[in-house]
Amino acid sequence: MADFSAQSYRQPFPFLDIDPTMESLTQFAELNPQSFILDNSAFNFQTFFPLSVNDSLFSNQASQGETMSGFIHNSNQSSVSAQPIFSAKTEVEEISNKRKALDILESSSGNSSSSSPPVSETGIKRRNNSGRGKRAKSNEKEMEKPKEVVHVRARRGQATDSHSLAERVRRGKINERLRCLQDIVPGCYKTMGMALMLDEIINYVQSLQNQVEFLSMKLTAASTYYDFNSESDAMERMQREKAEEAKELERLMREGYVGIGGVACFHSSSTYGPL
Amino acid sequence: MNRWRTKREHQIYSSKLFQALCRSRRTSSSTSAKELHQTADRVLAITAKGTSRWSRAILAAPLTAGTNMKKHKKAKVTVHTRLRKPVVNREKKKLPVVERKLKALRRLVPGCRKLSCNNLLEETSDYIAALEMQARAMTAITEFLGRGEAQAPTDRQGSIGNM
Image 1: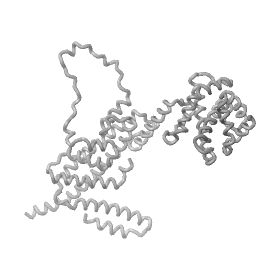
Image 2: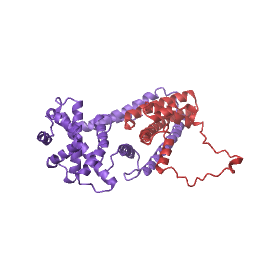
Image 3: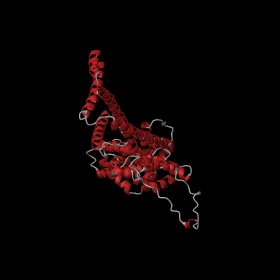
Image 4: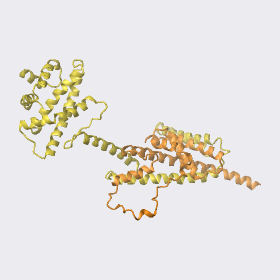
């Protein structure tokens, strides 16, 4: 059994032979998780995981534990034989996700406890077992609702509990909207904080509203002198003007490309003369 | 946000505004600046096609809403105020700076009194873009009217001179 499992661990990508390894996996999962991890550690330390040696111990064990449950989960959900490669790819992503998330979980828990990360295996085991509930939940959330929930990657050195994640997402959205506004509102530079930005935005909105008010006064003044009764064709005239403007622009552009010359321009400009 | 920049929207808005202007001119000879401002805002909200909150708020508000000034509740001064213990307000913290500014912004953008920060910023960007387009369209119409005006008086003067 041990040899067989060793073989399966040495070729995780792609998992074309998941079916035969399924039984062994379920058995291992059902057995003591502790002994399971201990067994894996020996294998994983020598195998292909490209992580650095410092965190290899924690993350390998933890990731292996999670990937096992992940594979079981996946195989339970979907027909493995039909999509071996696809599931392998997603599993690769999930592994990298989980590895990173677990990396950070480990580092954050290490930070919060303000102690140097324990090197002993028993310490790792304990942490794995105690934190497993949390990790399983957050990982399951990621796996079960891939379409509804936005995948948030916890970066290195940042907390990964659901509250901080949600807050980070919220802050990200607000910052995105702020950046959008920055492009619109003149006089904002990137180094401005939220308070200054809001000041600028408020000023700009107020000035725009004042401008519109002033323009409305100007328009009423202009419209009093305008004879609206004879303006039944005013709409047509306006539209004609605008259409002509647009056409002229278009023609100019086309002539720029084709190079027919200024003759056509001259004609078009002459038609606008009397207006 | 980007739709307010297109020439098409500009044309749609200015033509609608001009039509509304003609109509209001025909019905009532005296048009105040306030009325015109309100009509312009309503036409802008119509052009928005109801996708944004501020446009819906503008259209939902009744016509004479501007004249009904909301009076902030003033503290009623009665005889008993001195007898009550004075509330110590100096120690109270002001609301955080950002919150105050968001409050001010909420007052500026119509219909966003209770919006969250996130949605408020979105509405603001749409509102700013719409206001810019409104300003551009109104200047264009003013120019157009001005040009029309420049031609008409010359005819009128000619006819008056002949008389």
